[in-house]
Each structure stands twice: as C-alpha cells, then as structure tokens.
Image (cartoon, rainbow, N blue to C red; front, side):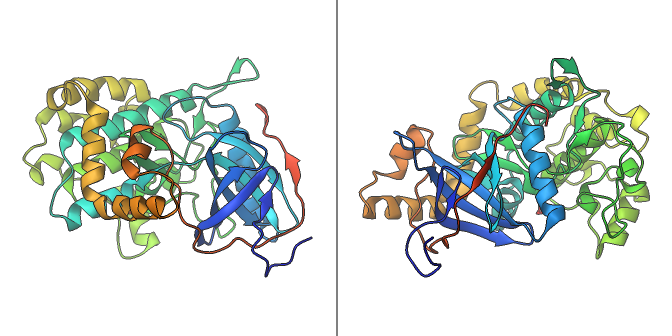
Length: 364
C-alpha cells in the first residue's frame, strides 16, 4: 500500500483519481480515468466515507436507480464500489456548469437568459423526467421513479449546449410506502423546490417533479427566487401557501401561453397539474419553436461560451501548457476538458468492485 504522502493517485476500482474537483458535506468529487482503458476518456468519481452510512445508502441507491435509465439527458453511471476509505460511484464527466451557476453568471453579467435558452434547458429536463417516470425495471413497468430533488444544482448545462439531469440519490418509485422524512424529521429534498405534497410528507408521484420543474422554470423566467425565504421552515411554508406572481409581470417577454404552462405546473393540488412530463413538454415545444426554430443547442452553447469565457480561457491555457491541444478542439470534439491536477488524491487500499445492476435559477 502506498502512503498518503506519495504522489501516486488514489484508485477506485479500475479508476485512477487524477484531481479533486470539489469537496462538501456529501463527500468528494474526483476527475478520473480508467487505468485499464486503451483510449482517453474522463470520468467523475464520487466518494463518500464509510462512516457516513446514510450517505453511502444514497450513493448506492443512485447507482441502482440510474443503472435502469438510458437517456441522453440523464447522467450515466457506470460502476460503484467501496474501498477502505469509502464508497464510490463512477459516472460520466460533464463539461459544463450547473443551472444555478448559469443563472448567477447571467445575472452578474446583466444578461438575463434568453427565453430560447431557458426553454431548451427545461424541455430537456422534461424529456429526462419522462424517461425516468416511465422506466422499465426487470422487463416490467414500475409506478414510475420520482426524482424528488429537481433544482438548479441538479441540472448541468454542457458547453456543447445539451442538458443533463443528475443526482438520483433520493429518487424512489412513486407511491412507495417509505418515509419521506430525513433522520432529523424534515422532508427530503431542497425546501425551496419541493412540491406541496413533498412538504406534507405524503407518498409522491411524478407530478411532484413537475411542480419542482415549474419552480425552476418560473425562476429562470422571472429572474428571482420563488419560494426561498430566510430559513428552511419559512421556505416550506411559502411552498404551501405563498402567492405566486405571474412571471409575465416580472418579465414582459413571457407570453400568456407560457404563463398558462407555469400556472398549471405550479398548481398546489396535484390533480390540477400536468399528468406527465410529456404533456408539459408538448405545451412548451410550440413556444420554444417560436423563439428558436432550429439550432437550439447552438444557442445554449453560445450563451455558455459567453458567460463562462474566463473558465474556458483558463482551461485552454492549462491544456496548451501540457501539450493537450486547445479548448476549441475539445469543444469541437464534444469531449471532456482535461484539468491540471491541483490537489493530489490520497492513496488508499485496493478496492472491491460492486457492479450496478438493473435491479438494484439560483442555487437551491
């Protein structure tokens, strides 16, 4: 076994961890590559300490859930396992920014997101949800998965202009007789993006995700938070009863048909909402066509390049420094950016692989 002071990278199963991307209460994210691959491909490995059994359960739940899903707008999870240091999850590397960061960058630049960009992203999210809500498990239809954590932080917009829905850690089949509460007695999810029934801790169905998507859409169009308040308790109360202003009153570019979509998505009685993500997407598509008849992903990609020009310039300099080409070549190939290791990963013991099986706005 190598020691923590060596420059040798940490291994997670067949994945070599190249550099730490981020660290937080939910664990750490590492940029990684396959040690046994004969081609260059990047991955992200999420690691959670074994001493946090609740987080480990969420991670393994995510692995089992996403193993059933195969959709271009849902992040791919390839493998999961554990080491002496913690459990890990290997997924595709997404070269982009989450929707919360995109929203804040647009606000800082004084450039509200074009409606074409907003609708393209939300239509992609709805396509992902339709797939998750109607997934098949062991060749039989399920009541449908409910993501339960739709928020700007769990939507990643790629520099290619495409969108990925991530973080299925608390996703469950709808109408499951399981607790909707955390260990601390609070509902699971981000308070400002919950549905009223999620706040009430009753069994959920896919319409809960549609309410949360409506919150995200409203915020992107209105340029402000909808239910976020000073603390979680006040945010939960706002979800249940705060008045909802029409987005067109805050953004004159929002048409009456878009207001109508939002009103239906944000209905507090789930019986009054859209019956499915597909139904909501079908109402948004004609409005999107008016704003972007063709080249929707190109419009999103152009916005991303403008708002995150400095990040791309820094990546370009880092790539050129190590003779890895240029960022333009990277974007043309729609590949993942190679970063310069800034914090060496710590080595640990060999890993035991646990393969996944089919059974198995502002920041929120």
